[in-house]
Image (cartoon, rainbow, N blue to C red; front, top):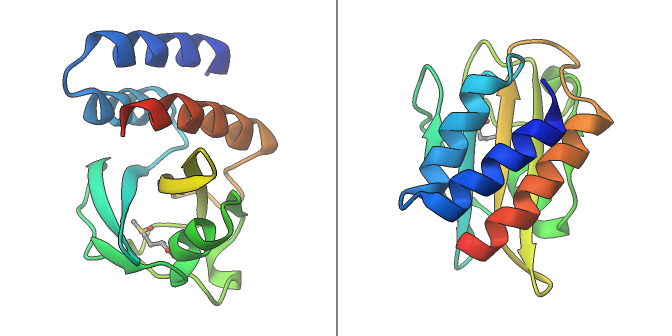
Length: 146
Ligand code: SME
């Protein structure tokens, strides 16, 4: 996938669409092969609450306390979490038996954590620095739409 092209498409979706967070989630899911599940969690008080998502299965983790799991860790620190092998991370909260690796990128505006992008992959070590940079740029665009 050409990430620059994807960023331009996402910019377009955000400027045109009414249901823009869901449409961005759908676009990313459909265009990037190694992303097996994608969701946007939004901060509500001390919790992360699942917003738009796309993938083969729903997750039971629709509300995650900040500080719990990989998702909660990223929301606490404001830093991207790139987990090559979820089995090796004791913080990991399992959603799907097929998940092997995960990336979580916070959405931050004016130093406030608004939410995050969470992506699972069915491949071990699926995510690279390029994925992190791409998703950090997506998060930077999404912050204006939350
Ligand atoms: N695995 C996450 C929970 C969310 S599911 O991946 C959709 C975690 O450890 O926080």
